[in-house]
Amino acid sequence: MTEETPGFEEKPDVPSGATPDDAEPKAAASSEETAAPAGDANETAGLVAQLDQSRKALDERTADLQRLQAEFQNYRRRVERDRIAVKEIAVANLLTELLPTLDDIGRAREHGELVGGFKSVAESLETVAAKMGLQQFGKEGEPFDPTIHEALMHSYAPDVTETTCVAILQPGYRIGERTIRPARVAVAEPQPGAQPVKADEQQGEAAAEDSATKDNGGPEEG
Figure 1: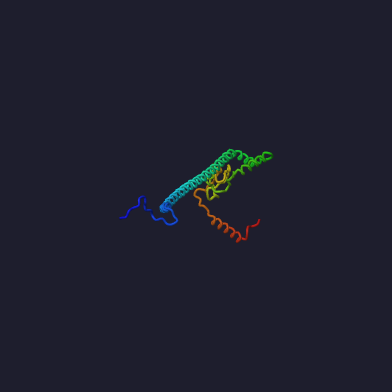
Figure 2 (figure 1 turned 135 degrees about the vertical axis):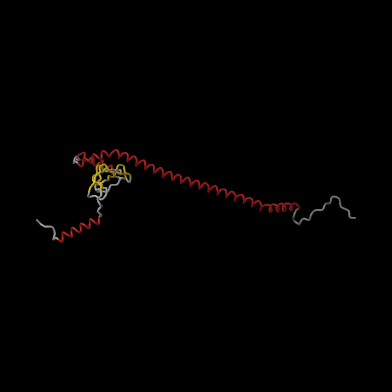
């Protein structure tokens, strides 16, 4: 029977040159190394989720900015159109008020009364009106167009093939494509029942008359 020596406890073998306390830090380091990869993966996943959220928020803000920019551009275009429209209306109203004066100047010119200082003032007024875009229209002999002509007198004539303006009672005025007053005219229509003469037939008749004149030796001399 072996006798145990009192107060003697067995201790684990410790490598030479090392103390017993060195074994515990090694065990702790091993457990930390095992837990480190799992912690890094969780942190990476969290960063990726935050990055996705940031990208989504950036895309939303970019879309909002683009929408606001498009709305601002549309607003600017509307404001510019309204500004131009208001300017055109103001100019048209002003020139409309000047039309009776321009009519008086035209009648004075026709009667030879546009002389001296009155002539200079009248011509200056007409020049300013033209610079503001006022254009006069309406000529004798042009076809009648109800969109730009107003017929005040009507008659029949044998020498017209369609409804024609034979006299301009008051000239018409327009600004660009906008008519502010139609031309007031006297019109003539072909005689009722008269057959319209085509241009080819008129040329043929003229050629026949010339040929007959040449065959007869030309016009007789008195």
